[in-house]
Amino acid sequence: MTTATVVGSGPNGLAAAIRLAQAGVRVTVVEAEPTIGGGARTAELTLPGVRHDVGATAMPGLMSSPFFRSLGLERHGLRLRRHEAALAHPLDDGTTALLWEDLSRTAQGLGADGAAWARAFGPLVRGYDSVVEDTFAPLVHWPRHPIALAQTGLRAAVPATLFNRRFAAEPARALFAGAAAHGFTRHDTPLSAAIGVMLITAAHASGWPIVEGGSSGLIAALEAELRALGGRIETGRRVTDAAALGTDLVLLSVPPRTALRLLGDDVPAATRRAWARFRPGPAAFKVDYAIEGDIPWAAPDARRAGIVHLGGSAGEIAAVERAAVSGRMPERPFVLVAQQYLADPTRSAGGANPVWAYAHVPAGFDGDASAAVLAQIERFAPGVREQIVATHVSGPQELAAHNGAFLGGDIGGGANTALQLIARPRLGYAAYRGRRGRTYLCGSSTPPGGGVHGMAGFHAAETALRDIGAL
Image 1 (cartoon, rainbow, N blue to C red):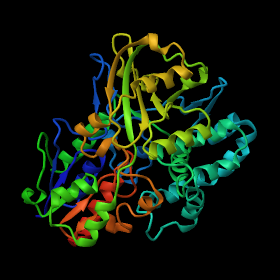
Image 2 (tube, rainbow, N blue to C red; image 1 turned 45 degrees about the vertical axis):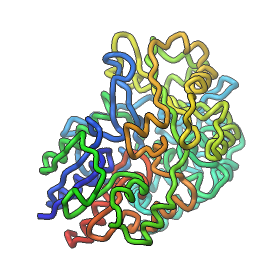
Image 3 (cartoon, rainbow, N blue to C red; image 1 turned 135 degrees about the vertical axis):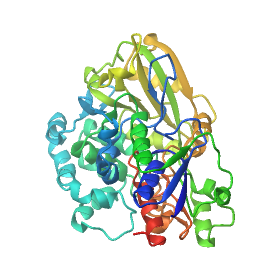
Image 4 (tube, rainbow, N blue to C red; image 1 turned 180 degrees about the horizontal axis):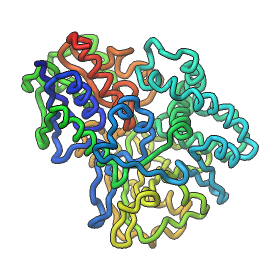
């Protein structure tokens, strides 16, 4: 029987392990931390009983992932909750743009830009089931649905600023710019529209759900599936030398530079050069709050959404993202806020509700951005400061210390430049290979990139199984 070790127990690591176990490989997942989950953990960070997602929270990729959908994780207790709206983007004039799952409702709310919104996303939503497998594969591959993929590619390939020219008014422009900002990249570069296009299409096609009780509920379901297939998990074990693992296959859910340290000389020269060039992106600065009552948004419609983007106009968002990418800390950074308790009251306790927030900051930022984060929330929710009863701060160094995949506080698996989106960190399915038939990358530094979808792990496992003749 072939044996394998997967290093890292986030969604990609567990997906890789499950796919290998399905094929009859005897697999062990090794995790350095005391608990599994990687970027999908849940913990009581502020007050007893108040549950905060340590990393990922809204999960558009979960509903779209072909592999996760195939597993039937509901039988392992996975339960999803949905907010009334997926996303809100308040503006300084007191109005709010809302992203609903229903495309027509979103378009109607955008007034004069509604028709343009429907033209931009309608064809993608209608063809989403056909193109989803292609969009979750390496960018360079032979597509199964070339026409549908071309429709997506033509929209995704342009700069976000160019994509936004189809809208005349600020609500639609800001709504798209906030979604595009999930790419942690400049908005005036090729392919910077891609993440915004895919996130909005996913919202209209399948929603942005959260996991009941916290993101760790997904990890628990994946763990149950892996153990049912005979897989093993070891926690509290930090790997420093992949060769010492002693298994036929080694799959690493770590950044490429970390993989180079773990693999030593067991990396071909061309792969070594590509991995050494691959660089991290800007970082996240995360702040969790326990608050009494609801966030007092100036625009009441912001209370209807699970995720709220705080960045003002599309132009302001583009400017602060450019600053963060350039290594300059913005005075008013782009901030994401999640109020998961609105759809999932099981996360609250003792009258206190969890609020999840993070700001985009330069890579390796070592300052304190907590005041800037709170100021952005206060900008659109005056008076929230008086409702905070507890706070937990996690800067880039703290994020990296508890998750080796978050190199320098980069939660996206690498800078989303045009080159690194195409070659992540190499072209096509070679992206997953360290040495054929032996070592592989399976984390978010490989296609299709960051997000809770498990498809990077799935493709890495499929590549390994093909290399050893098990497919």
